[in-house]
Length: 126
Image (cartoon, rainbow, N blue to C red; front, top):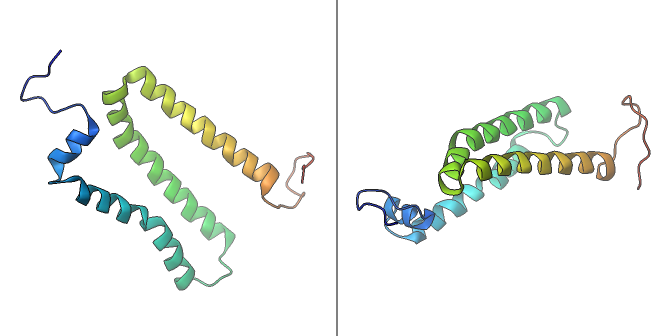
């Protein structure tokens, strides 16, 4: 079934080409936006002392996580529903959240050193 001439194309690369004159600026913008996080880490390291307060780091990480969750739900989820369908988009959203939760659990329990005075009994396999 062909789309009417006035309908926007459904292929993401074609949509990008409508927004920008060529693919090169899109790649440049994607590269520059990818540098934002490492640049923020360098800036944070230069501005703040090396012994950052743990609660400050926790607050900053929580704020960034909230921003990322908001953007995923408000911007990415509607696009994925449009391109992949509602069931696939919702399943992917929850699958991704489950995968990230599992990654954090494994990182905390088995890879990061921590004291054993935090209220639960378990063995670490180091």
